[in-house]
Each structure stands twice: as structure tokens, then as C-alpha cells.
Figure (spheres, rainbow, N blue to C red):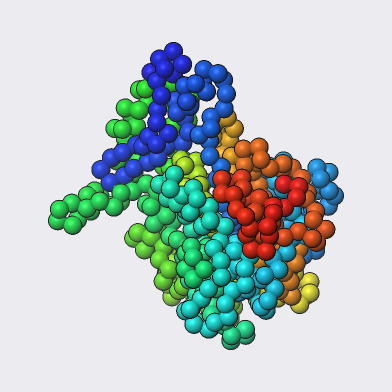
Amino acid sequence: MANIQSNRWQLSRRQMLRGMGATLALPFLEAMRPLTAYAQGTGSSLDPVRMACLFMPNGVRPDRWGAEGHGKSFSLSPILSPLEAVKEDLLVISGLSNKPSHHGDGHYFKTASWLTCTTIEHTEGSNISANGISIDQLAANAIGGQTKLPSMELGIEPIKSGVDRNVNLTRLYGSHISWKKPDVPLPCEINPRNAFDRLFRNRAKDSKNRPAVDPDASVLDIVLDDAKSLKRQLGNEDTHKLDQYLESVREVERRITNEAKQIGSGQNITPEALAKLNELNRRIQKSGGSKENELGSLSRIDPTEHVQLMLDIMVLAFWTDSTRVSTFMFGNSVSNKNFSFLDGVSGAHHSISHHKNDADQMDQYERINTWHTEQYAYMLEKMRELPDGDGNLLNNSMVLFGSGIRDGNKHAAKDLPTLLAGQAKGQIKTGRHLDTKGKGQLAALYHGMLNRVGTPTQSIGDAKRELRGL
């Protein structure tokens, strides 16, 4: 039915494309707009607000991060320069502190409490506790029942265990930012195939306990007949939007398959494979030579492609309203992830972050920081391109990007690097530098974010009200 208005035909917001073994949620289409709103030319209350929290480990080079100027008259620092194209969608926030994390030295107190704004329990064992629930899970508890997945927790590095004898703390704290309960952290999914399948594949099995369909079959091929049937009922604008969506899914699926072939796993990236790759990187760094033959094509994993695949999956999840809450870890704190894939960098992120003001180390630190910012910009630009309701996906979202420490060399936890992108459906004024003059609470920012995602709260961490100026 090409003309929704004249035919008064409406598609359910929960409409799916279905096939044996796959279910694809749809992005918002004009055919889903309530008929009363359509007739009156008003916006749709069905456009939800999404919230993403992207964590960058090990801080930043402090003299090259931030913004010059105040309010709308500001310029981005060198590390933030990749965000120039989305500057009007960005809120640079200076002077925030997470005081409850100051009670312990090192990274772990700052990482595990980044989204809880609490003080973690000191332990060398598995009896970990953040003494609070992270803001993503507070939101998931309140609004997660409205979507297929209450939340998604994504990352690129496996959980690290053992004890860090430098501070006598379990390394588990460096692998988690999402806490469902004070003593229940949620692990990150690091495998793009698994994250993709969680969104789009069914796990149903036949009576003989075999998979109902070929697990390698394309999800788009599985739902093709249903997609063709739906298109016959849509107008031109919705047909174009549906084609755009299906092509986006196809592209992500193609890249996941390509990555799996490159690493020779036959199916996916496993935590064990990534652990082996990290060990290989350490040996390469130590020897100064190449040991690629030891693990074959495993060393050809493209770190940028891995990150962007995970971000693309998060964007698809938001666009289809499969979830409204997600977190992403660019890496674990105190990890030995090697950044020698970047020009001008030779070594591991954590060790480089302890630059001791050495000019060469600080330059490498800045290059790593800039790479992280480039990935953030990649996600924001993609969200801005996707139509969503009366605006675009970025308009209807909040995308936090930051770290639990400022300078990795000093473990400084004041003036935390913090960016917030997206207007949350007009609830946040972006295109500004918000300088709190060192008096802002990170928890107060979270208080405001929870309010805007539909999760009002009396307090979060050490804040009882939202940050002024949002």
C-alpha cells in the first residue's frame, strides 16, 4: 500500500522480518507512525532515546586533549580533531571528577567504578564488588523490557584474571565497566559473529537437537521472502529505508565472514585466539622481529576493523530498537594490547601511557588517543547518516566517550576526559564546550543522562542532582 495516509494502513513498531533461524527487527518506518500523528503532521512518540557508553582505557595525553574557548565559541584539541565533522553534535565537558574512585591507586579503582561512581572493594580474589550498579544497568532495568535485548555489552579484549602485584588487586576489575548488581559484573562480548547472531539469529533446534538451519546461511537470505512481501505494502520512502537497512546488515555480515576467514578460525574470533595474539605481540615487541609464522594468519587481525565491526553492530541494534542501552570497552585497563599497527607507535598502550614526560612516548600516546577518537567519530558519523523518526539516529541518542583517568602517567583522576554526543531528542544542547571549572561531578552527568533516557533517579554515586548546563 503505497500511500499510508489515504489507505490508513499502519505497521507495528514491533514488526519483524522472519525466517527459519533468523529474526530481523526493523528500523522506524513511516508506516509505523501513529495514524493520528501522521494526520496532524506531528512527530512520533515512538522514537526512543538510546544510550551508549564507550570506555577508553589508560587516560589521555592531557596537554593535547580538550577544547579551547567556552560555550559555542570553541575549538577542538589535536586529539579531538577527528570529531570536527560532528562538532555541532558534540558536547565537550571539562572539569569532571569521580571522587569515589580516588580512594585507591592505579587503574582498577577508576575503571570498575567508571559507570557506578562508587568505591570498589579491595580484593585479590574473585569476590569482587563495585558497591553499586552501573548506569547502563539502571537504565536496562527500567526500559530494557521494551526491547529484544535489555542491553548489550561489547568489547575487543578477553577478561583478564590473576593479581596485579603492583597494587595487590585482582585484574578482574580492569575488564568490567558494566555491573548488573554490585557483585555481578557483565562480561563484554568480543566476538563480532556472536554479537551479530545475538541480534539476528534464532537459536531454535529441531527435535533431534540439531540446528534448524545452516548456521552459515546469510540471515538476509533466510528472511528474503518476508522482506519481499513487506516491500509490496510500503511506500517509496519506506522501501528505500528498508533497502538501506538490509544493505547495512549485509555489509556487516560480509565483513564478519571476511574477518573469520582472515584469522583462519573457520567461524569466529575466540577469547583464546585474542589472548594468543596479545602474547604474540608481546614477543614481537621484545624480540624486535616478526613471529607471524608461529600463529599463521592470526596476526593479520585488523584491530580497526574489529572495533568498527562491534560499533556497527551496536548502531544496528539501536537503529532497529533491539536495545536502547549498550556499553563498549576499547580495551581493558592495564592491558598489553600492542598498538604497533599505528604509524609512529611501537609498543603496548599501558606502558606507553606511563610516558614519564618523554617526548617520543608522549607522541605515541597521543597517536593512540587520536585513533580512539577516530573510532568514536566513525560511529557518530554513521549514526548521523541513518534516518530515525523525524531526525537521525544520533539526534535520538546519547553517546558517551571517556576514561576513568586523565593522565596515565600519574593515574590522575581529576578533569576526566569526557565527551557526550547526540541531543537525546532535543534534551541536550550540543555544539558546545561545557567547562565546570573543576567542580563538576561525573555522577551528576550520569544523573542527567538517566533522566533523559527515561530512568529518573534520586541519586547516582555521589550526586543527588544532574549536572548544570546540559
